Image 1: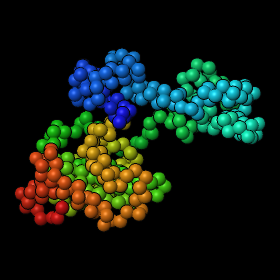
Image 2 (image 1 turned 90 degrees about the vertical axis):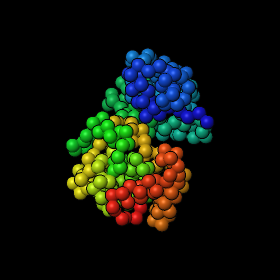
Image 3 (image 1 turned 180 degrees about the vertical axis):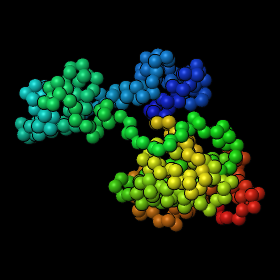
Image 4 (image 1 turned 90 degrees about the horizontal axis):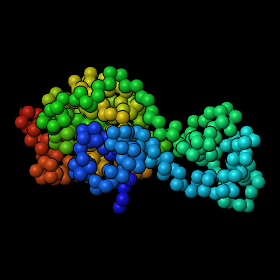
Amino acid sequence: MHKQINYAERYALAVCLKDGLSYRKISGKLGRSPNTWSYEVINNGGSRKTYSPHLAQLSASLRKWETNSKNPAKNRKVWDFVLAKLRKRFSPEQISNDLITQYPNDPTMRISYETIYAFINSEEGKEMKLVKLLRHKRLRKLRKVGIRALAPKKVKIPNRVSIRERPETVNQKERFGDWESDLMEGKRFTGDCLCVLKERLSQYMIIIRISAKTSAENVRAILQGLENFPEEMRFTITYDNGSENVEHEKINSALGTKSYFCDAYASWQKGSVENGIGLIRDYLPKKTDLTQVSNAELKRIQSELNDRPRKCLGWKTPRQVLSKHLKNLGVLIPV
């Protein structure tokens, strides 16, 4: 099944292009065919030298939106109505409701005000300078689609250290004790999430429930997951840039670890834990209500995954590899 290119892949493509790799070599590193990467650069970047992952993502998102049936220009009658009302200084919300009033029995004459705002903010809308038809001559904050919805959220993480400064021994998985952390969300508005920790060398995974996506809960879960391990098993933790990680220094103070953070939109840089969450999704698909999943069930999932042989471990299990290392350290803790 064809899968669209995501931002992480575009970011990786930009790095490969900067390194001067051919499309064939890029294909070998990132998968997909060489033609796929060639078309991506041409369609969303212009050329190898000008390709930007952020602008490419924006271009692809707008193109996808512009082909959507909700685009008002797809229905000429709706579009003429919207344009006429905009010129009379109607707000998008007034236009949306006036359509219902004027055409109560015609379901094709419908458009949401969010879609009108998004169309105004599209490339076609900008060319037509539709924003000047709004009373305040500016766009309101969009909730769904459009350029503003694609803008990155700014989260200030104190004393953030980039993953680019992470020691090479961590990058090469040459020692035990380097962890990756991430949150796995369930059904929206239920609150419960899973804090997932994965040790890079042994692939050993820890799953802990948290009651909310907050920094305090995340700190509690990580301390609970790692505090029983010896110092020789607590060197680094790699995070993304989510707000739940702003109190990472509390974890470092308690565990003696060092924190490193991925680049924006580059979750693939902590691919070990991302892969682990993908394995958990086999048991708990997206939109699962985690409040209905017992702690015993989470422990069972954790055990099954840690007892699954891995090719990268020479067909040993994560539990076997980690247990042997702990035994060599003279540490007797159950894993």
